[in-house]
Image (tube, rainbow, N blue to C red; front, side, top):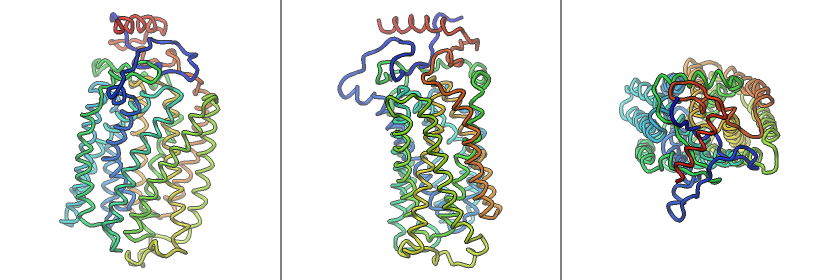
Length: 496
């Protein structure tokens, strides 16, 4: 047994101070205190996502990656999410071994390559293979980025502020989609053609390259002091064997996470219908860009709504969990009943007879207004869904290592679902089939998650719940009281 055991941030502060009381540290003052504030660091995390995945989302939200022929984009997305699914499953171990900042940095590098591939496709129509290969490489990078992001975003806040920190990240991240779509809308305003101009891709490429440098400016997680004075203790970089063992331990000792897997699967599945079968299918290019901007803007609204529900003060965490579940369940049925009324009126075959330039334009009010409001509600649903999933994982643990594993599971299964959905689109599966599968998966995912909320979400997370945090360097799980004593001794020594 080693001389001291770090608990990897298991106690991130409770709402009422009723959980165990670790050593409390004084936060830095002035500019240093502001810069190292957990909210500031989560905002910087949001900026990385703004510049990289946010602009990727803007491009995807236009439909077909901004191309007239959506098949190449669908195949690239299928490759992307296939490699993403594999990489994300093990990315928690990579994150805990390399550290979150380096993992985030490596993960951000693939987005510029992906956008450059679409620029090359505009310049050289035979570059379809490059686009698909870039998608596969981006999948590997995205698995790293999102695992590091999820671990930090859920570990920095206290238990009573987790939805707020998720919303800070989500708002900044989705501003990338808003700004990117606004740029695409401005550049393509005077065209109703089927694909975006080179300037759109060049602008996105420059911004993604800037975003890749932001992790270098972030504070090391081990130096972060939360708002309640508790320290975020980071993984100790044990052997790869222990890290892989931790992956197994996280599943074995907290099997209720499996009940969230169907929600994970559905969480990107619906993008295929929303982006390609709805926005990409019904509207001309400038209107697709406008719709995309409104979609990502509505995500900010959705995440803020969930803060009100999931972080409501003086309300028990279990009650907040059920309230959030109910809101998302109702929203799923509102959006899909509304969407069904439109989807039953068109097919792939009927749209093939319409020139892309003659599809719905935002100036055609009677055709446009109802459809754009549905797209806005889709954005609210997406943000509400993702925020709720992240919050549920955060309710299960405060340990950055365990959260890295959970986030890896989330992104792996999410990406497997997305790969399947994009592949279904690439082989021209009927629109209605994809729509119905989206609705069924969302409803089923929520229903299957309900027992997990009832049985696993507690009002506070204690050290007894954190088996991964109690692993020593040899992979043995120590009793909670032993770890608590060693934690206290370690913090006193550091404070001295």
